[in-house]
Length: 71
Image (cartoon, rainbow, N blue to C red; front, side):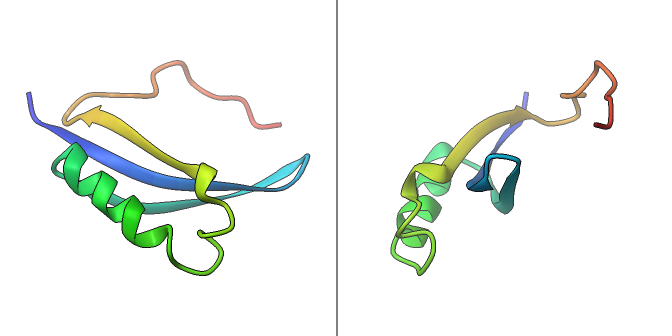
């Protein structure tokens, strides 16, 4: 199966709010990690480096299957 690697950055604004940025979708973990290394040097990201997240996703597969509730 084909997979991709999604890079996001999450920054907590306060206890009730967070800022989530989709950085990009990459064909390999290596490319995703290179993206994070480049962005760690940029303003804002350099102060919140712990906010980066890389997740592996299989293509053509549902990844959220339980429905949702709006709060």
